[in-house]
Amino acid sequence: MKMSLGSFIRRFAGESGGNVVMTFGLVTTVLIGLAGAAVDYSTTARIRSKLQAAVDSGVLAAALSFYTANADTVVHAHVDRSIPNGITPTITIAKTDNRITATLTGDVPTTLLGVMGISSLPIRITSTAVYGTGNAEVILVLDTTGSMAGSKISGLQQAANDFVTTLFSSPNAANSLKIGIVPFTDYVNIGTQYRTASWVYGASDYSTTSNQCWDTYPSATYTNPRPRSGTCYNDGQPYTCTWTDYDVTLGAAVQQCGPVTANFTWNGCVGSRASPLDLGDTVTAANPVPAILNVGCSAPLQRLTNDRNALKTKIDGLVANGNTYIAPGVLWGWRLLSPNQPFADGAAFDGKTRKIMVVMTDGANTKSPNYPDHEGGDVALANELTTKTCANVKSAGIEVYSVAFSVTDTTIKTILANCASVPPNYYDSTTVSDLQAAFQKIANDINNVRLTN
Image (cartoon, rainbow, N blue to C red; front, top):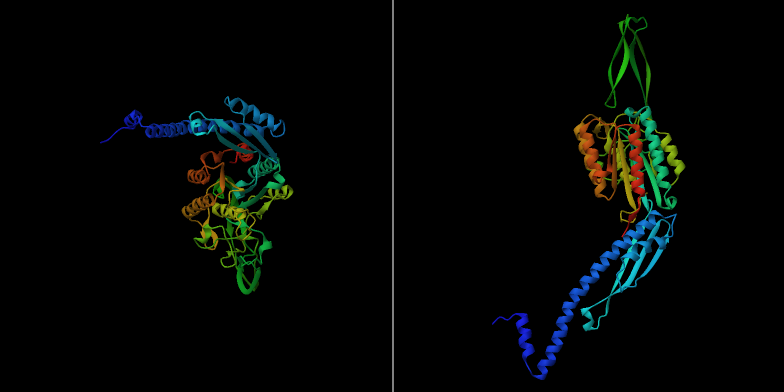
């Protein structure tokens, strides 16, 4: 026969035996205690949630007024008004460098749990807010291709210098912040100081000499000059250009013969290893990167540093030339942030140090890998590798911001937008002023007050 709990209690209470009455009293106490536990724990959870929000709000406000107000006063102003009657918690506040931590401890009086001898339930709430970068490593991956010439490169230099200044203005940044820079074209320049590094191969300069013959035309004439104008392209970007056509009469050829010397020089430019190595951050002696001789590339990269003068010197020395292949720029930015070889400069990916990358380009990919060099023209392949590299960087735990600067190609805009960690991290800038505003917003975002627990 089934019996409800209420029927059981009523029947049990109707028994008149002494043992039964005593047992019923004990059972009733337990049942009341269990019901009380649910009520009191629910009440405590509600109060704790309310106080957690108040403490969070308090430390955020205290961090925002880091230099202008007393942290204790600011935190108490937010928390005290949220404390329910009957609770007198203790609040301790610690302020170190750019970090404020508030800890609230106290006891919430119980109601029904009192029948079981539990008069209160303890609560402990801790909240930490950080102002500024905190422990952070930031890489600027900057397009310095030929299409960036003129006001665009000078505008980028101003934007990047202001970015560095803003980040280093945060509390304790000199001890907690490092910034690196990867200028890129269709290649990245790692610097000729790594010529003999075990993780680079083929970096030795050399010359060859051979006997050759060639024709010259000493009596050639150029007549009937005709000025012309049209559309030319610099790294895929159109511009108006002018030239002069002539009628050329070569005349008799004169053959010359002699030794011809060809010089092969490494300027610091590196190409790509075959897939999948061209998508990973680690470079070792077992799998070195190829040096590419007799090609021009960007200024050498800057490894992570807290030396503001070194960063400014690097930024001021940027020069616009070359074509665009974005993936290597992103890849070497990852390598600068990585704790792995070849540089091993980055802190561990353990969540204790923020890893941030800002990727800026003014145009679409115009070159692709033709392993080991980047002289290919497969734009679809370049786009695919750029997309995959961005995905790998984010999977590694790096927060990515991306900036399109005067970009008209919708495909590369989509790739850049998807490269950003979250949609608000993507900026579509049309003018130099837009570019500088984007860099400033990113710097401010990195410097923002935030909770860390």
